[in-house]
Length: 269
Image 1 (cartoon, rainbow, N blue to C red):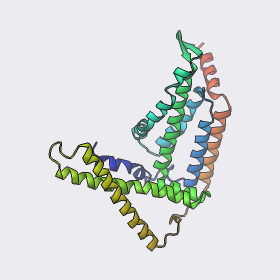
Image 2 (cartoon, one colour):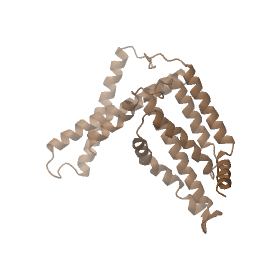
Image 3 (tube, rainbow, N blue to C red):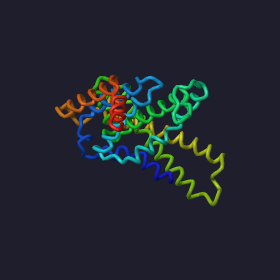
């Protein structure tokens, strides 16, 4: 994948948020509240819990289906950042060696159980965050946080951080194209050239950021990012949040998976 393709792939989340499905039409505040509740519920499970986390995959699967978000796109994004979770939990089997179960004659240590639990929690939380942006857009999430009472400084910094990513990549694209036009064969690919390109990129982005900031001040920027889109909580948004809260309470505080397992065993006896 070339640098240009990577650049346009970064903005794909925003392009997906412009669709007109039932999930996209929900109020951003309802989706933000539902996602935050989902994240805290998943994180609240103990470190040796695995079976109780499985039903929570219904939430991202339903969002992907109803929001028409490509399944492989979300999976690739999760796999891209998965090394962080693997690095955090990979040492658990070495440190926590106590046997907690025996499956097909093979002892399973508590470390492997906690490692699988970390991977499941990571997959659930990252996929939920990706789907929130893909169905709302990052500016929509920032404006929803502002309407929910978050400080304007916090939401504005989040929005600037996201937008500045595209400014940084645009400048990097120009530099790389200029280098490719002046390079012959393997020339211009050494570490010295790379360090110089990083320095040029830093200077250009700082200069670009100053010009953008002065342009915003000349247009009346006072520290807050107003939104032209007026949103209100409708009955569908209330129904969505009520359904989400019921779903989280049932699967968090009731042993649904155990009951399903017992019912399945009785069925096949």
